[in-house]
Length: 620
Image 1: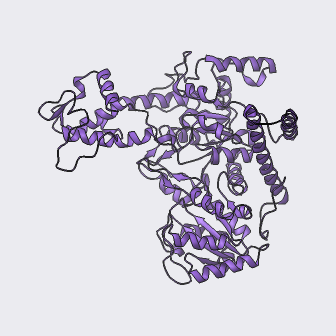
Image 2 (image 1 turned 60 degrees about the horizontal axis):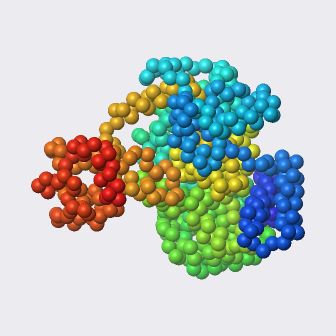
Image 3 (image 1 turned 135 degrees about the horizontal axis):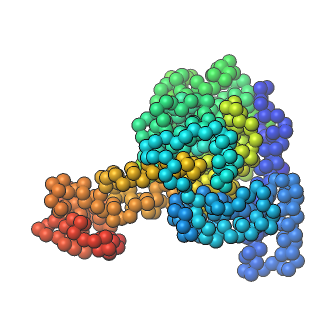
């Protein structure tokens, strides 16, 4: 069943023609059909516990097969296939690497080897036999070491030469000639740049490969992203990343508003990420750059009284087919008080009950809700997630469901409007950089199934999930319609063999010279063990390394001893003992340590690694 038509008038300067609208609607209908198919399949699997007659089961099977055949004939659906794991951590032996074994256990993927034949010229039977063999235990795809010295720069072949070299080595991404790249969780985390992100960007820049950084942030535009990428710890190169290579969901949201909102519209704005007054807010600048006369005709408010909110709700009710009232969110979750241009008062600065109540007045009477993205949370360096715009949007969706569900506009990755206003714009930016725009040659890279991968599926481009941020390959089963074609541990694994060999050599050197003092704290390590929403928080270092780092930090006199108070504090950070009051004395659970002398605990140097591991397990 097709979705209802878009609510509100079509703007006089709308860039989305009827064919695009119909395609987006058709895609949404197919996504809904896929959901029905999944429910049918689940019902069939539960048949033994469900009192269904044989005739009902037969009808369900026939219905599923019929819809699948029709959708596949229209090239709108294809049977799910296992993703390709870009496993670069192996050494070329027959054993599975950590990433490969993890993905193999949860979502079997085709493991590619440099010795495998070129997939392009195989006959179907040979290809099937090859895939079956690759699923077993072929050597992992490993770079060729020693191609250039550590600290040196790889040669700069032209793009055709690089593509030819990739095909000769059967590099699975040899056919990719352009990239759309997520930022948070893909290129950096709250603590800084992800290992290999700078090398990946250097590869794109040196080879002049068209690329666009597409962020789902609603709190900043391209200049804000440029400023973030210029900070120490986040910098990708010495020169700033060009604005022509950056596009955010906030910019896409501005495009949508200028094209869809009529003159004299009433706009209730919640904004975050800008501490300036309203006239200097980034989103207002973006809107005025697009159409200043139209934007100046809008009644933009950041604070409404009870009486004004009810008056606006009445206006929304009076124009059900000609939308006049809009609730707009320019934020990554938090909001800040921008000065109201009408009253001069400070706008709402936090999600209080009063804010939610007044927004609910408008939305429950037909106002349209516009946001940049539906990311559920925003990560922090201390592993405690911050509420994201998706949590706010879900609250308001619950309020207006089901009659008002079509009045929600999501302009970022994963949203229906984002398919046109973000992804199509990013593809146009790739064309401006010299790319042909052929979708089968474009790869979107991101860390979330429900935003990055879904956006790629909507735009009919190729998709790659990186496990350096929020989601991992094991979660694919929870997003059956948003299938990743490739899976990698980080963007470093997207490098061709010669560049990857250089990256590994430098990374191994840095790792050997890394000090224990640079390791994260005990509490951060323990919080990462139980983090349910952010894959990047899961620490890779062992507890032994964390304990040694803590010990060396507390052993300021370098005597090989720490106090029992420090030992108890360490256990408290691990959640294994109560925090010791400042100045008091306490003994960790089980005594003052296995080798305590005079109120001190012996250094872990005095025990071998097995003994330390056993002690840590007993403490846990």
